[in-house]
Image (cartoon, rainbow, N blue to C red):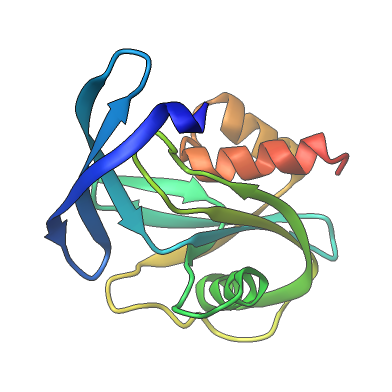
Amino acid sequence: MQREWTLTGQREKFKDAVLKVEHRDYRFAKTSETGVFTVVSMKDWAVIIPVTKEGKFILVRQFRVATGEVTYEFPGGALENGENAQDGAARELKEETGFEGRMSFLAKMRPNPAFMDNFCYAYLAEDCEKVAELNLDPFEDIEPVEVTAEELRSMIAEGKIAHSIPLAAYGAYKALGY
């Protein structure tokens, strides 16, 4: 199928420290039509499902500027340049929660392949223990929250956890038999 699409041009439309937006021209062989498609490039991300030795899940409660809402989600964030995914996941977990745990890979996901070209790596952190204070970025306002498995399921069912990346990570966690 890929051979039916030919990249015929691309132009950078916007770039800042967080993302780059390009217009890419593709010709579709079946119709000989050319279309302009918007592609957003960002750093790869990591999302972590942390579970304490007591079996509680660690969520982060934080304000999200785009929606103007306080959300509950699993910790995570952008990988640094050259950083491998597991190291980035462990770093984000410690920065946002102060916890460390035994890391296991869950899934490599495409957040939205319709117009984004990055990956998100999901990890499970087991037997998590508090080892440090939070180490937040200047505009992060994060509160770690521990919940039971039943509380987590209720929060998902009630729409209190609505961020698609943590929900996809939790789906991978369940699909893999955890």
